[in-house]
Length: 198
Ligand code: ADP
Image (cartoon, rainbow, N blue to C red; front, top):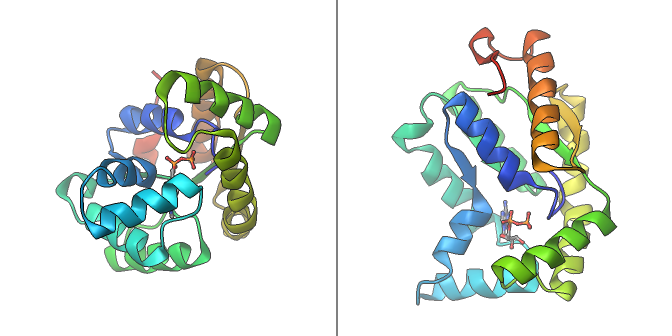
């Protein structure tokens, strides 16, 4: 978890590669979906371009379908999901049914000015439709309103691990792996997850 621009996608890929599990990014799934010429694709495109959240109904359905794929059998990493209380409830139910509880919830910390600056830079390089200044501010506020409160939920379950997301990508990765090692060695996860961050 973390605000837009905190570097979730980049760190998610590094962690998922290390543990040999798929990184499931709802943002990536929606970006792939929105290019189609269907009513659903148009709806997703309009919502994303405004900076708001795709409906819980659509989002929960898409994640449920993705988690049912064979590559998720031995574990998975979720990037950008859950983002609302309803998504937390749906995920809880899905994980209970599978008998696979979450090992850890990783939160990347970054202050708003720093992430807005990063996103404006990404706008120049990648040209993502939702990386313009107005939408970036909307996304920060939507995150603060709707998603930041979920950190408290996972913190109260003892699952939350916070990592400073500012600095070079490699520095942040090193912090992420150090935090994960500490967590799993502390008994929160399974022993087979302990490994060198390489
Ligand atoms: P960012 O972290 O910069 O917001 P993402 O790639 O994670 O980027 O998400 C891009 C957009 O996709 C979001 O602004 C939102 O419109 C949509 N989206 C992604 N994940 C979710 C989700 N779990 N629930 C609802 N909408 C989502």
